[in-house]
Amino acid sequence: MKSLFDKLWHSHIVVDETPETPAILYIDLHLVHEVTSPQAFDLLRAQGLKVSRPDRTLATMDHSIPTVPVSTLADLDVVSESAAAKQIRQIIKNCDEFGLELKDFTSPDRGIVHVIGPELGATQPGKTIVCGDSHTSTHGAFGALAFGIGTTEVGHVLATQCMLQRKPKSFAINLDGALPPGITAKDIILRIIGEIGVDGGTGYAIEYRGSAMRALSMDQRMTVCNMSIEAGARAGMIAPDDTTFEYVAGRELAPKDEGWEKALAYWRTLPSDDGARYDREISLDVGAMKPMVTFGTNPGMVISIDDPVPTSTNGSKAFAKALEYMHVESGKPLAGTPVDVVFIGSCTNGRLSDLEAAASIVRGRRVAENVRMLVVPGSQHIKVEAEAKGLHKIFTAAGAEWREPGCSMCIAMNGDIVAPGRLAVSTSNRNFEGRQGSGARTVLASPLTAAASAVSGSVADPRQYLD
Image (tube, helix red, strand yellow):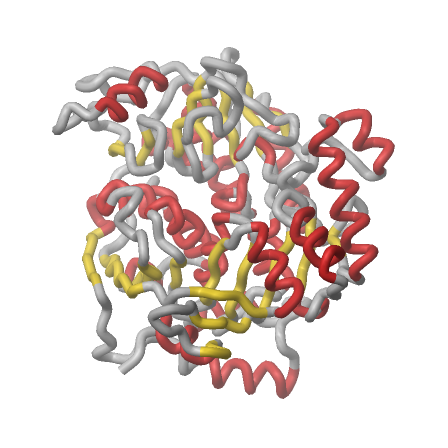
């Protein structure tokens, strides 16, 4: 009896691992962006190598791209910092030299790498997928084995379409129950990370299972898998089902006609067999969950929004340092803490359903005077769809900024930053010190909680704003 992970691992082994050497694993899809690829292309040049499979390589620009309108390199020089502009110029040069298609300024397909892969149908069940980015685990929502890799490994995959990898252990997280109103996939994954810790998944590939997972949309499943790395996991996966197949069907890069039927037959064999064994297993009931917010400087420092900030149980200096950095006190609730910035976006929560959720809160309301609210679609396609639904008008009428697609304020390298000492409620995935700007303080939350906080002017429970 095999688990989903075991099936994918064994079907992609080129050379088995030994006590002395990792396995050689074949890679079906390599996603490339401008930040972790320059040195990898330099490696190819130095060795006189070509890209092994351009047809299995998808490139975009997302991390360094400004979220103000940019359509030419001349525009870029006006609005972008020199380091970011250099990265953008370099990926254009590299893709042109090595014959790779790049989703550039003018492409209607451009967007965050972990948004456009699924959107275009490149992400499919049963694939091995890598990218020089930690949150590649997002694609595991489709029943793929997906993980982030380092810059040197990016070069290896470009050259060979393979990589060296030790087999992780398996970890089943069973989630059952019905989500209460106002509770989202972001709350689920934050609760999981709080439960197992930021190192609870280290050395494991997690499979999320149970009725609560099967009830989630693909957007929601991607949110859960996206943050698996924040629990230390090598990958996060959800078995494909009819929800998955309906999402993939008809997309540009999805199989067609007879190829679709053949693929579908294979995909239906992927879910874990009854009786499959895991190295670790836990169960959680989502029915009693509440909105979750982080209070410290890693995603595991998380509480329900109506709980007080806890006290360290072992007098940890790191815990005390995190509270000092965040300007919060043990024993006091985070709810009601004044907010300076709200960010809706990222590869975690920049999809259409996330924007719709945030819009449902701000519709007919105003963003508090003391708050700057940025809404950044995850891709050009999402921006077009959102505008067709009038979401941009809802946000701008409320006083929010409607931006161009990109990673934006998730990481302070594209001009969208939080000023020193300011507090941001963010739908992104990391709340490390300085992640959103030097001295910036970050509270991770769902789109509903972030939008409610924008309206309230302080960290707020979104359930009070639900119709």
